[in-house]
Amino acid sequence: MNDVTTQSRRKFLKKAALGSAFAGGAFSLPVLTHSEELGFPENLPESMRVPGADFSNYGQPSEHEQGVIRWISANPAAPGNGVSWTPLHDLQGTITPNGLHYERHHNGVPEIDPAKHILLIDGMVDKPLSFDVKSLMRYPMVSRTCFIECGGNSNSGWRSNPIQSKVGYAHGLVSNAEWSGVPLKLLLKEAGIRPDAKWVIAEGADGSSLNISIPLEKLLDDAILALYQNGERIRPENGYPMRLVLPGWEGILNVKWLRQLRLTDQPAMSRDETSQYTELMPDGTARQFTFINEAKSLITSPSLGMMLPDNPGVYQISGLAWSGRGKITRVEISADGGDTWVDAELQGPVLDKAFTRFCLPWKWQGEYAILQSRSTDETGYVQPDRETLIKNRGKHGFFHYNAIVSWEITEEGDINHVYGYDF
Amino acid sequence: MSTAMTSNLIISIALLIFSSLCHADIVYQPLGKPAADISKQSEWNLTISPDGKNLPEGTGNAAQGAKIFALQCAACHGPEGVGGSADPVIGEVGSLASEYPEKTVNSYWPYATTLFDYIRRAMPIDRPFSLSADEVYALSAYILSQDGIIDAELDLTEKNLPQVTMPNRDGFISIYPD
Image 1 (cartoon, rainbow over the protein chains, first blue to last red):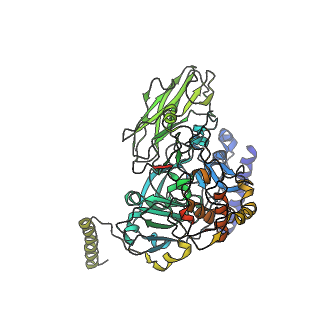
Image 2 (cartoon, rainbow over the protein chains, first blue to last red):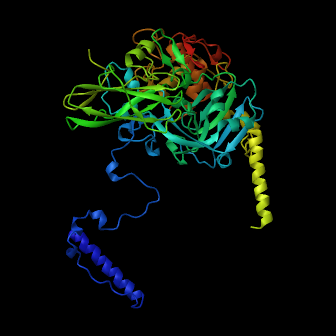
Image 3 (cartoon, rainbow over the protein chains, first blue to last red):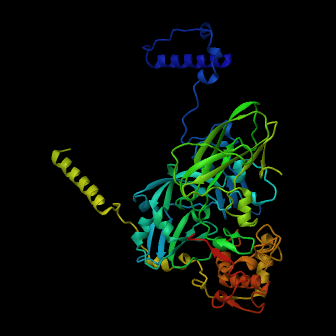
């Protein structure tokens, strides 16, 4: 520390001397003060005694936060086919930073030159139209904070044994951002919607040319052709230069790298609306076009991977709730596996189809506990427990798992993922 | 700025706000470019619907498809279309209501047209759009014939592919609108 003090003083003297030389002697030498005489500077943190780092063109997280990352699960034989999970356990508030927004790619992140990219709107329209990025930038834009959740999020919940992964790495195929762009209804109306049009086939410009059918009604409602994500242009892995954002509807429909919207009277029955993103029921039939992500919630702290250091101690239970049907109206917390419930505080503003942060202080006195959260949305829909979800859907649905998540707190303060009391 | 210019500006702003209030419309300049020509091009007509619209002309059979499968698909999907790192495509027809259901192309997919659509646009995963139409018909014929959905001797074409009835054709229940 003293070395640094000495070095900086030497640098300062050298600069002062040069200054003096260039100013032809008009610059007077500083009165030398021995900092040792002040008595305390060596007690100050180094950050207060030396100049800080230079400016940066694009800021990065602290080097001490390098463990806050998306967890990648991809197919080793096809590394562009997989997901990366948002570390919900490491985040606070409701906005997911752009570098941590979850990813689902079917064949990697395409490199797209915005100057060469167009969006074509055709099919059952009066006049097919193409839009380049430059033109779209001149349209009136709206901004909408909403979650996007993969239909396959939390699918480990269908397994017989509870997965022992941190909450984000089991439930983090959901993120929340402010998306800005052009209301799709403007562009569709410009092309002229024919009365027999009912569906829109959206197609992406990636290596899987992902195509999927969306009801026209949703695109005329609150859908956005998003160009910006949390204020900056959309990241390549989230659809640069443009993507669909359909608030409250499952991730696969929010087509990234959007190149075409074709209006039709029938769905295309593409791979991702038949083979995938459909839910097999116990009788062998499958639910199809299950677009809406229903109400869900998770306690992000305390959660697996953390522990309770003090006994007794006060802990701030904190978590996230969201619903594709509207606003979250209530989140309840149980510490006894669902026998009794207490209302948590909802942090405002509570937004439609967006993450809502809830919190509740909890005094723990070393007892065995099972922490759970249960959300209710403005339609009155209540998040189901796992038993109810499985009773209604069986175990092979794979998609749209939204059951209550349970954290077991042991007497030692360790935290495990369980499916409820192990009767 | 002169007084006249200022008042002109105020009037034009007022008109703009007035007109937008009057019609409850958003004021903007439509900038879409006419695209009737682009719309007709093959590369903008990739999606193949269950009625077969957009299927390209071509023909292929199971024997040809077996050879292509071994070269292009088996590495990920397994030599017999099961057991690889990628989803199984063959077998398990009738398993969906059992305790251990398997969703293969032949057991689960409701339309054969989807098979053509998906292979062409997304497979093989390292070279999408590298297969010819004949090759995709041949691969489809091979996969479908392995479970007896079509005759092993059939030449699959743009005409008869949409007529193939998949075993799980009626297995899907739309819950939209709910």
